[in-house]
Amino acid sequence: MNAPAVRVHDLRVTLGGTPVLAGVDLTVAAGEWVTVIGPNGAGKSTLLRAVGGLLTGPGEVTLFGTPIGSLRRRDRARVVATVAQSPVVPIGMSVFDYALLGRTPYIPPLGRESAADLAAAHEVLDRLDLGPFAHRELATLSGGERQRVFLARALAQGATLLLLDEPTSALDIGHQQEVLELVDQLRREHGLTVLATMHDLSIAGEYADRLVLLADGRVAAAGPPEEVLTEELLARHYRAHIRVIPGDHGPLVVPVRPT
Image 1 (cartoon, rainbow, N blue to C red):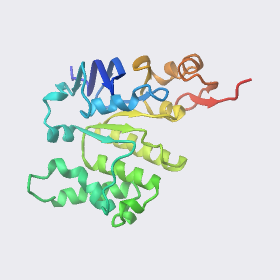
Image 2: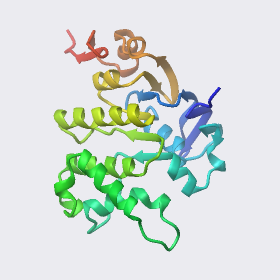
Image 3: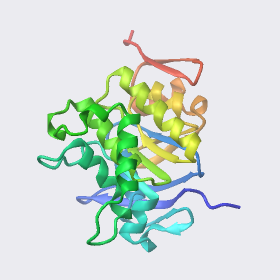
């Protein structure tokens, strides 16, 4: 039996003296798309950072059967790629050079990028409709355009596990759909595993195989979107007035004014 792509057991993370994750268990099968949802402050981004090796705490995190602490940084970068909410934008860097950073794990120390590395960066920019921006300075792009460049760098990395922290937060609805459809297409074509966080519950339910609802640093519910996106669960944990409507690809969550 193949090891899961991600296994988290009893993970606890404290930041600034405040417990953020209080014993989280999570398993993501290879090739699966799991999206973590939950109210602000639930620990969603912290969980992704721990899975990506950027945070540590008591508990266990394994990637494809290997404890994350056993992976050297370079080897880890060949396995997992992360799109953070607000990555640092290097001053003066072009869109192409930023995407090319995704190939760093494959470039020998003191070496230069190969023709294959250059081709990989060009290909992913074209797939994200960013080819015309290749020589533009990254800082001159709109928020939505920069978000697609951040995704391009992660995809150019060629990792088998993709961590997406609010990947559509800066995108209009058209580009939200384009980016998520592309991620899903690449997942099916290349066997990628996707672990994401999202605020938009309807979009989360349409694309994920499973949802994990975090609340107060713990898993409050997990399962197919139909089991997690219920009016009772969402009202309890989000303290919101909503209606859940069946959709073609998953439940649609509609906010409604209190009566």
